[in-house]
Image (cartoon, rainbow, N blue to C red):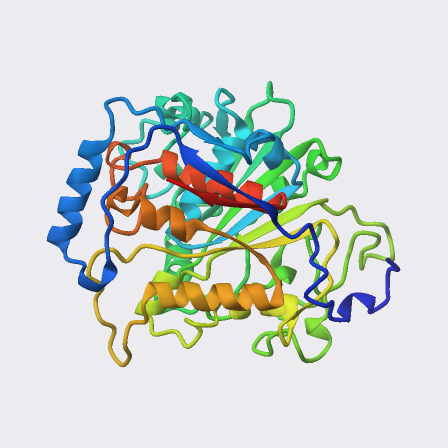
Length: 430
């Protein structure tokens, strides 16, 4: 690949994805999980959901182990996670659950997760009992449980976004930093990133450049993982907003509104060999996984015109007329299909709600036709175990106690994601 040329701008055919397209279909399951009651959104009421929730929890054996098994588990999940130089998750609370579960897999069952010294704590942090330099206390002992390695997301980090750095040497703690620098800054980010009525500009500013571009990451001795909160899609993801070691596009507002199809801004270029600083070489993170879900539940409530075109819109700077732009061969885009909505949804003014299943089907069709991104099957997992959700949308709800949630289910989702990204066509099976 020659630096300084436009050869990256040529659309690739859908038959040549950046990494191996999934093959070898297989299943993952929870050992001994009893069959759950099934829900339908068409006649969902709070009473039917509550009854199904009570019955589902009654069917679970006492001290259920949540052990995962399947033919796709030949490689440990932690090894799959550390094979990436970095992972960036973008979306709303369903993506946040899976991002945290993926970090727990990346860290391993015993390694401490430390808050970066000097980091601010969220306005939602309750009671002030968590030590500033020790995040493990906030996670709790559930992380070391038998098979699920599950944990709930700690409020100390807030819900706007964060970045973690995990050295591959498990004797060294992972370091985590929230996206905000003060409580006032956090409130500002909430008002711009996490509002249904406030279009987000597509910038992934939650990715901490100091951690993402750390020398250990560049050398392949550590992996970073970031979560960028976003409840309302206004513009496509802007890769030019990423830290310098991750950037692919020229211009921070490249191609906005044009779907990446017009002008120089839509050209995807590699910065792996040089930088704009006098032609000096610039190190680049190897193997990046970018995961998004388009905040479909929020988009539906906001009457977004993109509800049936979410992946095309979110990844608009990565394709042209449905043909994938060539990315570095070690980059992978991943789509998390949505779920939830198992309780009656308020009817937005000025438009009709679109069925969640219709949104998922439209996203899957576009992804299969274009192969712009891989898709892992969060929807089947969430639908099968929907009665175990705390509120009809979440298995681990940010504003609910951890004991009311099911953190091992996002852990399963993280397993599905990592194995799909590694080239396996893997599904959740009962």
